[in-house]
Length: 442
Image (cartoon, rainbow, N blue to C red; front, side, top):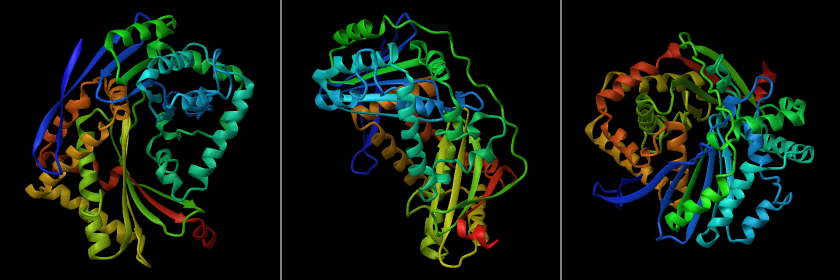
């Protein structure tokens, strides 16, 4: 059935809004593949994306990094695409492609001129139907992943915070979220070829995937091609989902992490929050914006502009399917003690817990989220990604338009209530993130 949605957005940062109608159709093939098609013939491009409901949390103990590894491995080649030719084919046809992995899902996509739609469908069906998984590809991508880990995490300033490798291990005891998405090189080195093949067989079935096609297309013609290319793929046994409940954090977790790539430390407070589809998670996104989003945020104005105790403030809300984390912190200016930063952060949190934000600040907050919502769906590629994400992780593709209504319905009183519920000292990680040189001095 075709679902007509209203995508509301702001014009020129004003509160004047009008509705743009977006249409998409959802259905399922006999093999369990979920399909979402969005037609927009005003653009000359088309995006073909496949999101598999497998991420780092689905990995076996001692085999971390598999989900992210497959993001690389499945570009190696297929039965009908020679090794090393994937990117050449895409580029030769005027397209672009990429993939990304989170704790919860893996997403592959190509964006082509619209006359190459069939090529995109064929390539993604090739990836699903018969990729070549051999030792040459595993060894090659093992080196690629090692270099990515070195450049993005090991040798990147504040890499343990940006990628949560120095955080989640404290926030989760039993849940696989405690592991990093990129995993450990020891686990990947120790894995046998048959383990990689088994991972594909378990998670890369059509009944664990959602295909999204968006852009300049003809609906019935596209459906026919989807059936031709993806219909023959056999379904696989249903995936058993991770269902692990963490005990609440009831005492402050004190920790220190060191980074050889930094000169300026960070004082960070990290809180565990509900999964991304929970209403409280939406409220926490608004709280994050109030405290640390941009130069007009409360912590920036006070700590950077007014009191000049911080060089910068930061926040990394990390919504995930089962749980989320909210990281807030600051970099000291000059000789400001980290505990001084902690004191001010707590004071700003306490204000949220005891006072309603002003009507003016509330309206500004609403405008900001309106703009963010519009920008996330301002391109065909963005719409495809949003449709896949909302369907796979939230169970409701309609959120591509309806999610903004959730933010609109959040009240000032609710912001105060949720701050009191989650932002408490005995429910957090208190992290000192220091230069490696300070470790040597101790």
